Image (tube, rainbow, N blue to C red; front, side):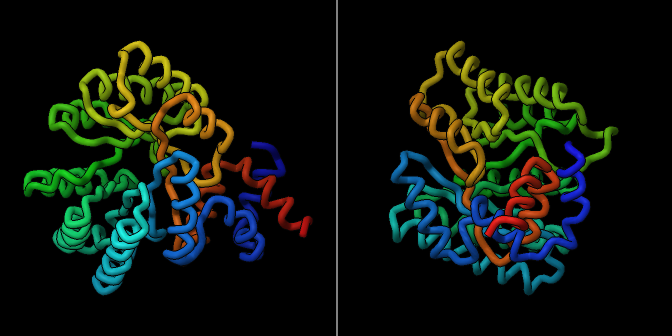
Length: 299
């Protein structure tokens, strides 16, 4: 991290929200569902799938969890109404996980019921390591209850992920594989870039060789190239995997993957909680500090 980038990240609380907003507009569809729909429609026209994500996490009251649930249901209806090629991603803590696991389970089940009725799919996102066991338990309970229209996320930087992946492959899970963005302890997580990359590729090999569908979620050229090589080696068909990227990130490489004949899904976040999302992404990718700097001085 350069000195300037480090300085901007440290000074983040002092930077005017409007400045952060100018930068965030590239990575966030907007604050409303209508803006999210427009962003997805544009991606679909460019040959890309999408996942819509209502921003927010760590709610503190059951009433808030119910409100989030009721705000997610219209996303599924809008996808159906506008005939979009998109599914939905949800975070367990925005649906009550830290309050009561039963509350969270019931809220997710209601969302899956709506998705099932509309022929759609819901990805249960993975958050910090404190939630991993509870998230996987809810996912497995939903699968046992007959919900096949859902998948889970595995973070490659966690030491436990190989064991989790091997079990999920045996269960026929739909897996999204990513590096992981939370600042976890070295006791439970790989911290070096190469060791995370190596574990990502090891997990991806287990998943693909096990015949399990996977969303390969990365912007890292080493991992993209490694995944493409593995796909060629295994002779996989297009329908057996997809690449995934975030809105506004590495668009040239994204287009290259699509032109190469691979399915690619773009995560499209929107909502009033855009500021918290933006600051977290900045800390994850300090190089974005340059865009903040330009936004401060360039109108």
